[in-house]
Length: 575
Ligand code: PPS
Image 1 (cartoon, rainbow, N blue to C red):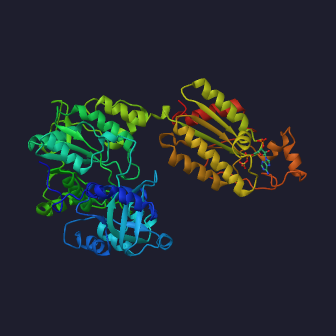
Image 2: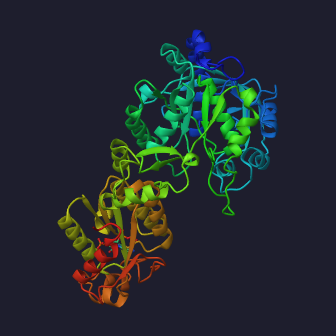
Image 3: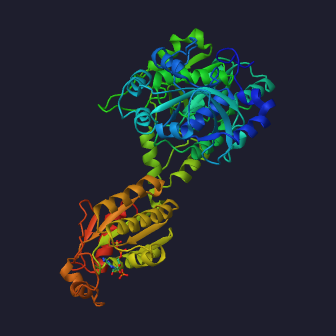
């Protein structure tokens, strides 16, 4: 028997509104549209599928203030996290959002009309208070404070929702269950007790052991219920994690566990979030819920201290035990005992018995180096899924970005590097010389400050895409401005994933040498004024302040430079 939903009734708005769906679709086509943000889309899905029961819409001012201050809706039902729809003043004016207005809420990915919002009020939240009360501190180091301060718009719109349809997914469709579907599944399988396990991380053997143990002790089944909406920035992406979960499911005793994905946008709100997670799992039908040490913790604050105490979440969930009516299972830290070849809760291991563990940091190190990950720590299929997404540095893409004056020798170095890398093999090598880019990508651009900047950002974009796919990229524009080079580095590092290895090489050959050896006479033309704004003559070249390597073709031969560079990079990538 699935657990009773929070508030007594599952608010499955999709099922409730199914009889008038055609009518809602027709009306949605006539209304003004609000295209949802990624977070709002996650929130809407849980409102309309009943995961946020008893909510039936985005919170109005009364509920919002009550939740912020007391963790309860205005009718006193326990609900610890504000679920709000933020809009800008411009959106309010443009869409004429006011009480009584009906708006179509659209999926930002495919523009589908998902719901109609019946606006009850538009209000200005006190963001400082929301941060302090809900998240514990108005500190920008908290990812949700950063979201609230930098991304959430200034006004919130309250109102009830009529559901048209759930968002459409193209990934892991068969693993996505609504609360109604999961409840039906438990019923079909005759599961009476279900221990839900929340996670936003890859799972290894210790997690399998602790969930099996929690279930056995309570004669229950296990629901692996990972978050695939929004998690903490920097987390392992959900595609990789779901492959990991799929790899671990067959390791459970036959028929014990079920995997379902939760499209929640986490707030990393620690204790309040743990209560929220318990409510959500109860709505999905679970009877028990595992609450971790530092559950949904956001890491360190700007003073280097943890935002919440390690057991604050367990304490708060215990405080509301009766109202929550889902049994909390404290997460037991498991450790491996090599002499017994098994895992045991760390607090049950007798003194003096040797134990083994691999921390998250150590695991990332091993993945990076392609080092062994022992069978006692994780399953071979799990490690394989992680290795595919986190290849060792020797298999990752990278960008060698050469900058220097015209005729500084950067093109010759770039060509020589290309040959050297081709000889090594193992990666596809792409050469983006200034002249190639100018003719193939940037033919309409000139040499103004803005055009040069744009040219470099195009190179950065292409480089990031290639290196993300595992290629070695050698780019060699003049790139005279620090700002453009910094933006290029930022783009590659932030968007190329494991291929975000960016090395800036300053080809610092002096102007006199570049000019003296210029057989094409381009500098001579610039001196005569036939080319205007030429770098080094009548336009600036800002030497890089933080090049990874500086070379000079007037001091070293090209083979010497290439040789020294492969030394410089050998530890990082060129092996
Ligand atoms: S930048 O600043 O990074 O966008 O420059 P880049 O794309 O590397 O382009 C360099 C080529 O353009 C020719 N050229 C100029 N360079 C500098 N300043 C001015 N005003 C200028 N006008 C034309 C320059 O000779 C390089 O040509 P290639 O084809 O590489 O010989």
